[in-house]
Length: 157
Length: 407
Image (cartoon, rainbow over all chains, first blue to last red; front, side, top):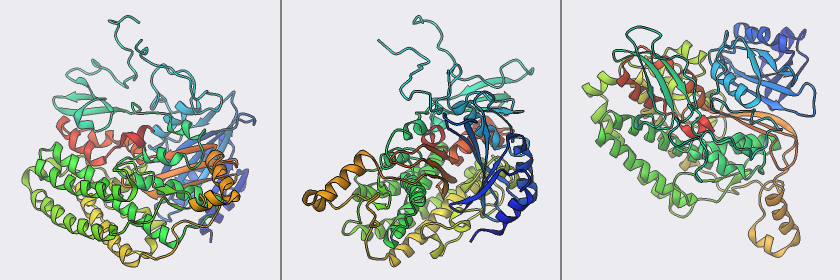
């Protein structure tokens, strides 16, 4: 049985949510990039989603817009998870940062920027986190070859 | 690059020396005996007090998520073992659970109980490692040896079951690699009794030890609201006083059928994190005894040829099973298109797998919500304002595991 909060969220945001579905027990909301911050703020303030679990992206090279940016939220009050997705194009992979709502977004957004090249507006610290300074490209994009090597220090002969 | 040229710096510190008069900026790590994994902390010090800390991870990054996209679903099991290698079985089961949900598979009751048992056994090994290392770094060598003695019993015992001491590759989509060998449960009860003895001694040595309390109490304090805001979960969040535990809140495996408590701290300091882990191990022992008493008989793996390998004697005697075997090994199990986020309570916090499938034998995307990585994003809040020497026990109390942090 779906938790009642699913229906309340869908009803509250029916205006901006482009698609809402329950997938394996998790409510999935698809919103436009410019609505993301507003929806996240409401999830936190009105529905008690106080834990930002995760920020990542999915690359669909053949699709336009190319990237899904995916967020997972959890409420420590009702024990429910919500997945919020937004789609951005390869030419302007920009979404608003959630650091004004969740400090946890800082590291997760850095990782997502590393791996997919998504820009998070208003997150001033998008330094590499899992990669190193000077790394070229975004390794989890589908067009980044798995075997490409970029050694920081030349290999020994 | 000539041999004498300085090596390029892989990181860009958030701040450098000379910004404030009278402060010193030091770089700790990435290869430092007290940081367990390879992690680098740039710290600005006033005297011996840490004013600011900038934490850099990634030295152990090995492209786990990229690698996942070109191997079959089954081939990933040895990889997920190497995320949190202190409790590899929990990773195995969390991953298998996510894939099984995508495939719509419900595992057998015996498998469900055994996975729960092994997950709790792994949690004990993980907490023993963390607590032992943290105590050793404070000079408590005897306590370290007591705890590691038990951990070695556990490792050897798991080696009897799985053939490996640390990275077991024991989970299978739809079941487990094999059933328990004869006498395994008898030895388990022996080890649990030894556990009571040795952990009891550590309690006696440490809990009310003046030196230990002075080093741990009111150090690295984290409050609940702040912990949640920075994404902390697991023992670190519970040490701040809230009983948030996925085993209770969103029960999976057999946890809904078990009697156990969720220990919490009172202040969210290093002492509470030590004590929460010690108490959690007791609860795990309590759960394991219930699981052993109620372990149901029956098959271990589901009867589903989409993912479970056919019996060897069938592979050798009938063509359908031979083809089935080949198809599962070469092409991989056919997981229907879809996406899922599935989380288990790992030893250090919420371990989530976000998996996207487009159908076929290879994942389209596997993302791990690794508690250690999220915790590294907020660890500076527990370091700033305390002494440089406190960095060691505070960092130890989080149990950052490089394998899952850097992936």
